Length: 474
Image 1 (cartoon, helix red, strand yellow):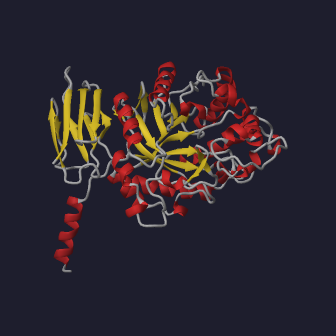
Image 2 (cartoon, rainbow, N blue to C red):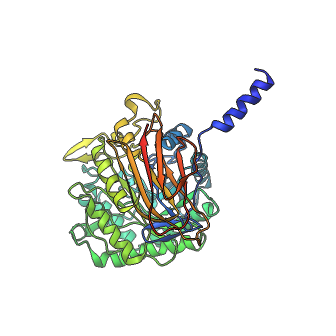
Image 3 (cartoon, rainbow, N blue to C red):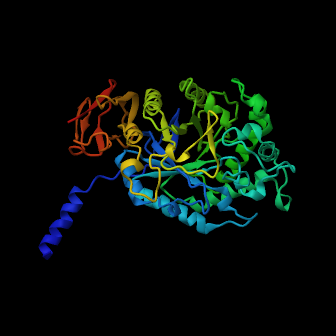
């Protein structure tokens, strides 16, 4: 290749490379929304990626640039990255920064694709001691109860006394190694992680714990009204300690607290939000009898405490229908979400309706050691998740939605007044949803991005009537 041809190729690559979505770090919140530094409202569409086996980092699974590029084509702008406490503090008081370095490399890799990371202290069935993952085995105080069971996930939470004792003792803040309370250890581990990532601009925030279980209180907590006193005392105290520990070393990133796992199935929560302007509420929705109920309960929590909301799990399905149903509900309420999951292997049996199921089928990709194509990818769910949405709104949204059958997207918003410095509204238009391109039209605003750009950029002057944007496939 001649120097001229090489230079021409370089110019072409620079001019015609796909536009990258810039990382927009949340700087505040209003109502259910996170906001950026200029006050624009932010919407997140993300996915989960957790490694539930030692060494517990994502790189060792083979999760890398190829996967991030796929997520970008799907239009996703965030990944809930599993951080396993057992790997953070394998021995009491001994932190493993090599593990955090690997997590940071994954965060940086995702950032190169315009994808931010929510760091999640993930747990299922407390610890590896119970054939799960999450907390270190040394933090499991079981009161001498049997560590053997024939019960799989999730029924083990209800029928394994030793597992229940481990959660009970966590909520009681029992003394562990060195006569230090289990909650103090947990909070200190979070403080160490937050200190490590405190200057990282690609971090969306920290999620304190995944699906905390109520231990031996499960019978009272599984009632539709929940367990108000236990929520307000045991869980709220734990949440407050961990949040304060993080805030003491990192005042920039958001902390998201989570209710008991029973919330996922329509049970109300009475958890008290920690104080602070960097606190949000994370929740899950696995209640097929009424997918609206967990959403409604989350909206009530936001109304009560002013928390911005993130649905950090829904799905775990092999079919597109429930994905579309919940995504439509979330659009209707203009809420952010993370799908479960990109890839899923578990150290425990997942038992549904009395049968052991293949947990790998919950993933968009079944096996990260194989090519991301053919039967290794659930194309139906991938397509269902690939839908346009406004990732940053300069103004007040009046509504938006996507029709999967016609692939038509509509947005209406009242443009921000002159006090807002950033007047650009951005809509992510996934290439997966529009393989042959799209046609965009606007009223009361103007489109300033190029034809078929993956990010539709819109500018509008202050006005009292809604501006509208419409996207249709070519």
